[in-house]
Picture (spheres, rainbow, N blue to C red):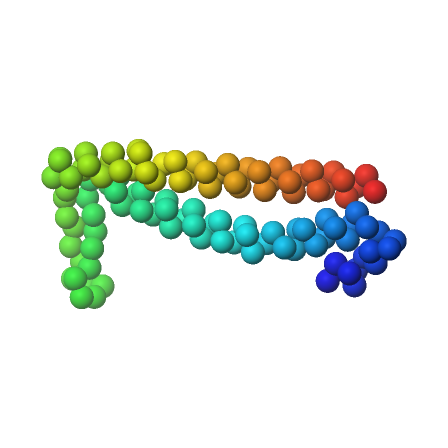
Amino acid sequence: MAAASFPPHKYIAHFILCGAAAASVGVVLALVRLYLGWFYVCDRLCSPTVFYEESGWYDGQTWTKPQEILNRDRLIVAYEIKPILRRLQFTFAALAGMYVIGTIVWHLF
């Protein structure tokens, strides 16, 4: 797509930026999926009550965690899951910064 839109011998900057932006779409989608999955795990572990279904939508139950299990789960969140979420947020910020820099370079050339 980038080579068809911008011939590399004429528009090298646009060719590279378009190719890089298209290549990073898959990375962004994978990161969003990872972030949403870990956020769901974090939410379930931090919650004092957990909703679950035994065999179908009609017989859902709510389980209230005992205090010791709630404390254990919150320690797991604090020491194992929050660092993963912070790394993913940092990666999102880095990708957003690269998009901004790419946009600036695009308008300069």
